[in-house]
Each structure stands twice: as C-alpha cells, then as structure tokens.
Image (cartoon, rainbow, N blue to C red; front, side, top):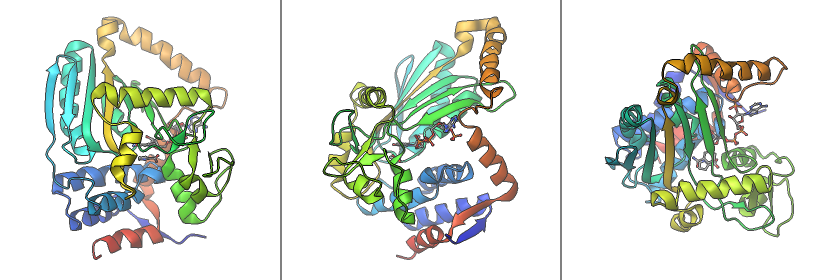
Length: 338
Ligand code: NDP
Ligand code: PYC
C-alpha cells in the first residue's frame, strides 16, 4: 500500500510553487502552473496534478521551455485572438488572453483563441471552465507528442490529443467532458508504471506491435486510439485544427523538437467560444431548458454526467484536504535542493 500524506489545498499549492520558483520559473509562470496542478489534484485528476511539476522542471532543465517568457496577445480579426506564448508554458498565455476572448466573443457571437509557441502539459477542462462560467459554450483542442498509432497501424503518428467541450448550466456546475483521443492519457500510463502496476489490455502495443499490459512496453511502443477508427479520425482532426490551421506544430514535429528529453509537448492550443445569447437572445432560457431535460434523462437512469466525479472530488478536497503520495511529495520537495 502506497504511503500517503494529508495536505490542505493551500499546502499542495505551496509545494508546487516553491519547487517551480526554486528552479527558476518567474513568479507569474510559477503561479499559473501551481494553480493548475493544484486544481488537477483537487479534482481527482492525478495524471494532471502535482505529478506534472516533475515534468515542468525537467522541461526547464532540458532547455525546452522559457521560465519567464511574456506572452503577446493580438486580435488579428474580430473573432480571432492570438496568444504567442513565446516558448513558455501555455497557462500564462491562456490567463492573459481569456478576458480578450470573452470580450471579443460577446461582440461577435463566436470567437477563437489560438495559443501558439507554447509547451503544454495541462488538462483542458481547466481552460474552458471559465468560459462556461461566463455563460459560453466552449471547445478546446491540443496535439501532444507522437505516441499514438492510427487505427490499423502500429507506429506512433498522433498525440494523445484531447478534446474538451463545455456547456453552461444555470445554478449548476457546467456540463464538461474532457477526453484524450487515445484510450487513456499518457499520464495515466505513467502513473501505472511508477506504481509498478500492469495496465489494462487494449491501451497499447509494444515496439513489435503486440498487445501488452506492460506500461513501460507501451510507453516505448505505441498507445492506441479510443473507439478504433473513430478516435483515430478525431485525433487527426485535433492535429489539423490545433496544429497547421493555427500555424503550429503537429505531434510528430513536437516529439522531434523534444529530442528524447521527456519534456512537455511543444505546439499550440485552439479554444473556440460561442455566446448562446447571440443565437437565442431572449429565448435562451426556453431552449436551455431542453438541454436540462436531456441531462435529467441521462441521470434518471443511473448514468452519470462527465465531470460529476471531478466535482465530487473537488467538494471533498475543499472540505477535507487531500491525500498525496509521499513518494511524489518527497520528489517534488527534493527538486528545490537538487
Ligand atoms: P478519462 O477517460 O478519465 O475521462 C474522460 C471524460 O469522460 C471525462 O470528462 C470524465 O469525467 C468522463 N467520464 C469518465 N467516466 C465516465 C462515466 N462512467 N460516465 C460519464 N462520463 C465519464 O480521461 P482521459 O484519460 O481521456 O483524459 C484525462 C485528462 O488528460 C484530460 O483532462 C485531458 O485534457 C488530459 N490530457 C491532456 C493532454 C495535453 O496534451 N495537455 C493530452 C492528453 C490528455 P470525470 O473527470 O468526471 O471522470
Ligand atoms: O497525459 O497524454 C497526456 C499528456 C500529454 C501532455 C500532457 N498530458
């Protein structure tokens, strides 16, 4: 049984921020990253929680990410916002560009934010939740590193390429799903490897193309898409719309840039926001009540909505704090002294 430590949410944030600052990240970047990984840990998303501090520091030490880049935000067209992260992590660029995206989308009804030239490690639900809080429908996409074989193939082409979608709900937490187009996020397989546990059958293949439950063999071989050819098509879409369309790298470009350092993927992220008021005007309530009927129909048969697990974990963590792996805690603490 893995040894755990009980921490408050503030202590988790402090642990992350101290390690990031000690390794040279500017206060703005350290704050944005620490807030993000703390939210991941709080919401029960361990693959995109504190564990990512190790990857961020490795990326910095490998010279793959800027510690203090100041993003440049521009609006080249009324519905287009661009955030050039200048080689830093995406999160500060997202933070600075978000109010601009919301303002533009209120004017135009639909708006797109391209975050470019960034390193990206984070869960996408965090990038769209603030848009749903502003009453908007939102989508987010990002490629990663080429780790995933296309359906019918056996060599990596795609990243784990997540897609997130958010729908605002009156007086309730938003409907959000956020899913890798691979069977699982790579971070999940990394957590199995760290725990020395076999992964479920079907998540990936080894370097010879054979199915395996050995986490390391899949990390060295290829991950598989979810839903066979359907996940493969969606993954290709993410490569295209959050790569070439916005003038940025594909997952294949990103892994080449990485040069085997194990750093976070480099590339872009596309976020699309829609203001329902521009479609519906005064009829919003009437039409949104139909959405609520659909959510009720799902839940009334015992099925759950995506994100419900996260929201429950969030409530628990806010009330009781969090149990953190002691091994991970020690590794992050050690980053400040090594
Ligand atoms: P999961 O397969 O665990 O979950 C995907 C989605 O399905 C979540 O919204 C989840 O909600 C929901 N869900 C899970 N089980 C059920 C169920 N039984 N009924 C209804 N809904 C369900 O996540 P992934 O492994 O696909 O991805 C994990 C994270 O990794 C994502 O946040 C993603 O953004 C991130 N990621 C980031 C990448 C990057 O490059 N930055 C690359 C790849 C992934 P809930 O959370 O409530 O369980
Ligand atoms: O877990 O697949 C993943 C991932 C890639 C980049 C950030 N997370």
